[in-house]
Amino acid sequence: MDINQVKFIHDYLVDYFDNSDDPVSPPGVKDEDLLNSSVSRPFMSVGGQDAYPGIFYKAAALFHSIINNHCFYNGNKR
Image 1 (tube, rainbow, N blue to C red):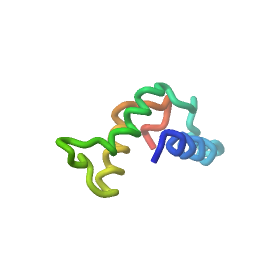
Image 2: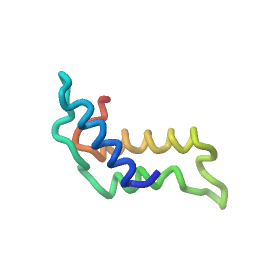
Image 3: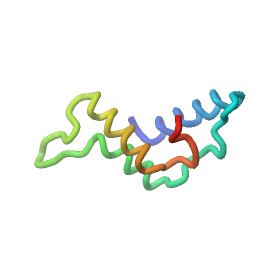
């Protein structure tokens, strides 16, 4: 997954929640560097070995980084 795909999902969710009781406001990326770091983390290696082998570990690393880095203005509560 690349940064553009993550932004697309964010934009989709912003639109999805737009007419709800709790819209995402303000939408958008707060820190592009932190988002880039979050998206890169699942593909890290240690000593030539994949740090996150398998799709489930990669997904967990991605979501963990996005949540902890707070790269979006609003949305961590969802």
